[in-house]
Length: 589
Image (cartoon, rainbow, N blue to C red; front, side):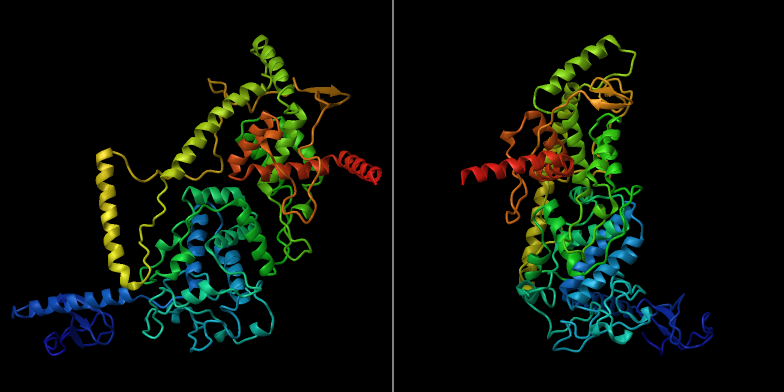
């Protein structure tokens, strides 16, 4: 920029009316007082000035490139914050209200940072031994405006502790922003983050260490607090389908957040999230944060078993008339009570309900009540229903278990095969290469380019795309339409051939029932029940495997939930078996 050459330009600035001009590298006039750039440019007389302008522009680009390669100073907790932000935004696109990110998840994360002494406390772990950089009260002064707002200071005091550490001036209680000016003394060849090495070695008692799977636990806690229409199994399925960032979520970090070395072990995930694992982590985090009792799960809430049973009956193509039976089982067992369903982390036995598994277990029990599922009675009742449907084609058809089994087995096998193929084809390596140190960066990027080019060449030869198509998100995995020509929808079928009138009420023709678990393991045992497939009928195995695939859980988990609800439903039977076992023990002695 040359002020001397711009003196000949005498027009007033349109913004501030000053006459004080300079020249940009591109030859345009700019106001030195308000920095307004005009469209007018100086006519170039000396051609020798052009190369110099180009050199200046190239130098400016090189400086930016060097700054980009150096990166920002950032901490591991800020990496997890980025992932939480991405996941919250993904949930927002799936239809979840913005309050989940702006209020609930923000508060949970804020409380976690305070409890783990990373921010919002008197002496954060990152300020020990060096001068702290804090955000100002005025958000316009923040140098983190372009980043996620999860750590910005909103007025959400409901979850922040009121202990001595938190009784501070609001100016010193802010978390630390990502420092965009990298410092040589803090640079590490072992990790891109400032505390990657220290974090990977950290084993402090009483502190729940943040991991990528725990980000999903945070998301589910927020969904549960908001009582959203997404269960834990739905959340994990959306992760698997790629609608919620989880695998290689780090590749969406800003370019300035360099990630390598020890960061790889912290943020790189090479396995799918498991239901039981996320469920346990969710309870662990809730207890660590000392969260209060969650909002009540009432009858009009999506997570109530009556509503979920209705949803899963539609999902697996069972008759609508079964809703009445599931409702009765829920009422008799008391699993629909508000106190039973509502999560209370500060209770003596902090345990939340597995809402989706519980609803599916109720349906399994109703199927056992109707058909016994002993590989005998269900086929006898199917023969009766088949004969009736042939003679009375114009009437409402009776539910045929055999026909339903054939339709569902075919659909599930096809769906399962596609799911297994998608898992086998999944590319675990990220588009953003990971390297062990900054020295290896150039080599790793060169190898990655070679791999990508080879993949393109092979895909062109085989005429196949390497990536799997992304499915649109849906609460249902199976879709059944009534009145279809193939007769594969059983929603409108009647249970008349299975039920009989007794006074003014209907009861099942089947009067027998077998318990899924005769004897429960003792409290010191890690599992409540045991599930050996060979000990059960083929029909029961099919039902258990069907719902297990639907929820992406282990068959043993569903069998355990069925057993626990049966224990509530048949209290007398269990009390009799306990008395018999006690009397036998006494006889032995």
